[in-house]
Length: 297
Length: 343
Image (cartoon, rainbow over all chains, first blue to last red; front, side):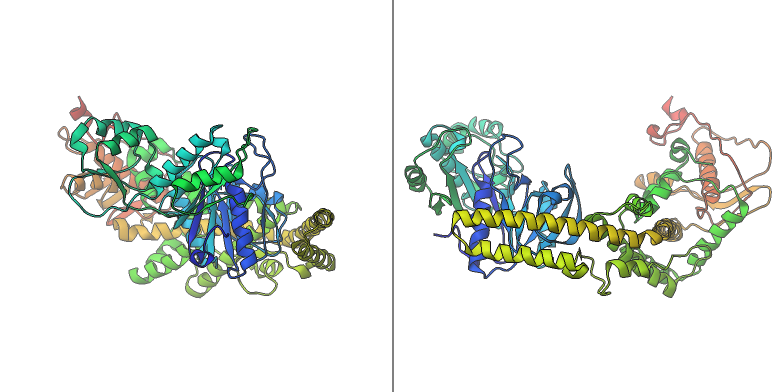
């Protein structure tokens, strides 16, 4: 089974979001690229990353990481210092004026296949501009490899769709990983706001402190709708959200990317692993979108 | 002589610099530390250039400024790379990409300048030869790559790389794949070596043009500054002053910084006319009557004139001045309030 419908992908931006480091974002990105290259209908996918990706060893955890391999015609946005670690034949298209600790970000076209190390812009506004530049340069679709634990790429302003990656690295308990995945996937699929009475708008980050303040209202919260900007702003814990729901309040969003799939990685970078079939089955129980294990199948 | 930031801020000169938007890194650099002209002929030449721009009708000047600005704002400061190249150092593929970008922008600026403008003492070198090195087909595309045909060796090594890759995509046998990956690694290393050699050759061919390109960067900075000086007519009603005589004389001066502050309070700036002869001049009047504003407006306009800027006045005449000393108990952080009011 493919990760997603490739015909939907054309002209769109998809971000790969990780619940934790080593959740398998880059593996999912590679699998998606392989599907695109095998299908052949998308000639010029564009890829970039928030943070560094494609190196063989994680510079933070020291664990093995998969490389990223692109085919001829693909576009990439990466920092100048990482070009020496990329072995595809390069055509430099534009400089973006976005500076990172690894140098300025350039957009290149691959004139051959090859490995690439990615290090793109990290700010939402910069990513929005980069997306426009990619499409202006002929990209058919854009894939963004997100940084660990950072859900900001779920921001509707950056991506049309998102793939949520979860894995055993989050916790030793499969049940806990499944619950957390279900919780985040649920937040990413909250209904879009429709004008109605009894609405509380919460612009910006909605944290536990915000919810605790709301919970002080007690039973008065029944029937109220709490409205947040988009999933990336939802930074509260599952406990406080459950309390809010029990009091009869509901949460809606002004905008959100489409949650396309949840990818599960049963192998932890810390040494333990879950039964791949049981893990996928457990996560599938509670999630409506396709749940995939791009390695285990 | 360099004008200190304190002096510029105290008088309102810095406000004018901050209001003018310099488009290129070179113009920005020139105006980071503006200097007074020490030589009357050089100052007269600069005013000649500003006057030539101001001789254009406002609509024409705006149109031309817009066209130059679109190019100037694309420029990056790559003078470091140019200097290294001038000293025989090989540039990387990224370095060559940036030089190509600079050459294409300079070609646009030069073409526009030759067609629409000629200012005495401001010219651009002919860098078409340099552009031909990096854009042999003359397509004018900003992208840059080292073409397969750059050398027969590069052509061969890339052909080998592509063949190995094609085989890699087809092969499923792990042992065979491992072998092919090793072959590909070797091809990539050879390609990298060939590309470096091509970069070195291209850099070497660019070396004779580097000094001219560095001078062109400076010319772009000067053009940027001149266009901003000319824009002061529309922004502040500024005029080119006369230089000479032995008295500082301004008619209907304004101080844009003070005027902006007054405008926020719904009050207008009453233009000032003053003449200062050699020796000491005493200014007197009621507290909060505008003595300090009058002095700083005079100092600002005199400094503008000596730095080659139009002055914010209906007319002005300034002798060559070599040094400015401005003492005040008023600080910029006092928000324009007089010393008397603060007490």
